Length: 110
Image 1: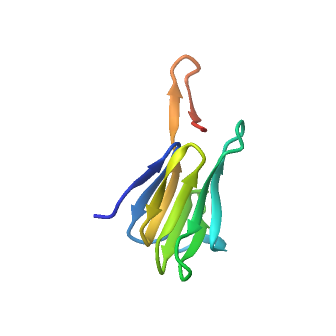
Image 2: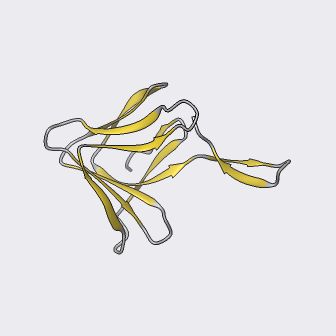
Image 3: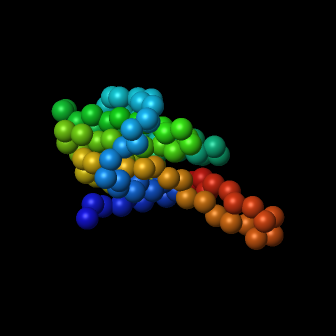
């Protein structure tokens, strides 16, 4: 069983494989997964080893996927402990909350 990772409002959920028709948005050494609107803080994913590559993809429904290969990556944020991300495929989710008074779901941002 592979690890799930959670840092604030970002959750990385392991998946067996990437969607076949996902569009590749980025390949490189660092990527901002999310940025706070109020504070400007960011969830930054950085290659932890020289040979590590990070790929960001999106499927037709707009879901974001992450591929970490050839080594580990580090997920950092100004207000959270850094997480060491193992090589694998992940779906990237933002935590949401349901507001019963407004009868709506909204994204949580830290």
